[in-house]
Image 1 (cartoon, rainbow, N blue to C red):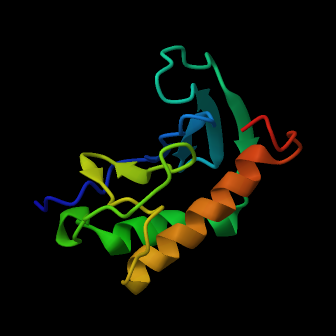
Image 2: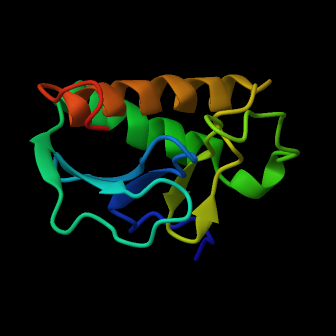
Length: 136
């Protein structure tokens, strides 16, 4: 038996938000859908109930799950953080089972993490399609 969480069927992308911008939590289900919930700007406590659901194209879905699994365990990467604006800086992490990625809003220097940064951008585009730019 391996320690790899092969049975995990969801990836959660968390953007912390900042003082001036709300964050979000996007749950990507291996079944082909995602749910995006907005979180309040730092300091707030209310989280959007329910969230917005979207279908994820099969190629994007396959790629993100393959890339996350290829990057495991996330503990192998340094997570030193990086300088950020207090007003606009965010932390972006992927959660997969008990694993948590380093901050993907900081520069990454590994091809597996670079792939995850691209995947997060693709998922963000799908999650926010059709929304006003100030809605997320």
